[in-house]
Length: 245
Image 1 (cartoon, rainbow, N blue to C red):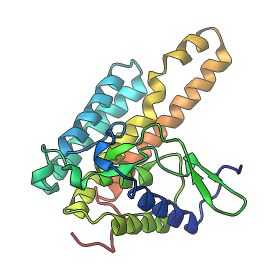
Image 2 (image 1 turned 120 degrees about the horizontal axis):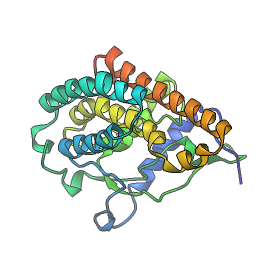
Image 3 (image 1 turned 90 degrees about the horizontal axis):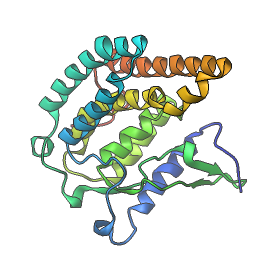
Image 4 (image 1 turned 90 degrees about the vertical axis):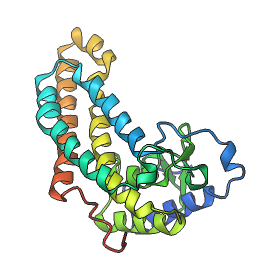
């Protein structure tokens, strides 16, 4: 019993970090399957991004196409060029060894949590759970559009996560991957354009059609905002001042 987390407090970040630390103690890590859409190398990550991009490019929508062609693609080229230079060379194509993989809920955050009367959080919904690169878990938590975290809370999460994962090359991998995961989320929020069910229902209902168009416009703004954030920060994660590579 409990309620959704409407306002994220600093101590909730601590609870999230503690939860991730605790699940690393589950036995038989190597026997767990991969997390949903796990990313074990830079090439795997760019492949996932390009797959999502290609699907969206098949949609006939001028606003979407303009964004993808004139904003997203040039930024992706720039980000990938930088990431390729800085990513640890032994993990560009070669997968992260199992010893450096961690257990991840994959879709982790306060959108999948219940706040009990005691103030404790219960995290739930582990259908995507499995082995992954800690970088993906760390970056997804920050970028997830379903959560509104302050900069201080994002710093707290990063600091806490680095405290859990003593992983060779982790800082370098994270700083290289951070803008790429942002771009990945920019495409995820555009999934609404792929929802066929909407079109069938909206075809016979003008009100639904208007509602859908508003939703599409809203998701496109979210995608643009993510790209803008990456550009403003010059592709560097702004929550990393406490860490040296």
